[in-house]
Length: 279
Image (cartoon, rainbow, N blue to C red; front, side):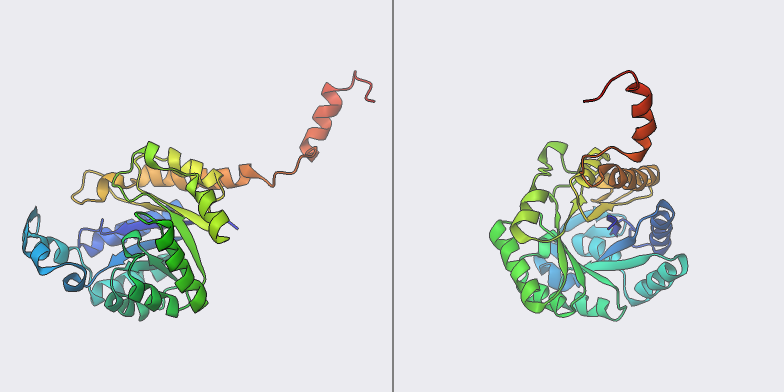
């Protein structure tokens, strides 16, 4: 089974549907399997105090102005759905509240995603699990007990899932990756495990691919210098092309682990060992 590569658009579209479409096209041309967005009901996810607090952005001087500008509505998601079908790439989104999950349901996406921040939201987890769609569950900022509870909810609901090891820092320092958690999660929960990376560069993602992950998610951007809190932890076009190509090469190179003489080695062995009398 090939590693399922997810290009996380998130909010890197900056509220512009044309930027979103450019990112979708980038993901498709690079060979990604899917693009992912984020959906929030602003007044449910954030407190009034936070929304009223100051924040300078291209759209105003409050947190509300910034967050509302980054939130796509129905028409934008209809266009995302249409355009993804046109170019031939899957899309889905991580909902940050129950209403957002119900909103996304109308598009009948094949996958769901639980963001690390939402793995402790039991009503949301139950709502997502009730759909019984294959769900990627990120485990950043979480204790084993919190992951245990999420896994239990999905298993009781009969909903297929895989965990995604991640560290929720933006950008993540390489030394904080702790990629050996991939094996820890796989051994503890007896399930597939992916990796959601927020680092700069590609080396950590390559290492994760070599550890047998089943999915890989990276934020993508047209330009890391663009406005946005996630841009600096995102992969630009040239990096995305390199990432997808290298990950698939790593998959092929890992092999099955069986020690044997490869058919291509036989004539070489005859040539190099011809003077040796084998026992």
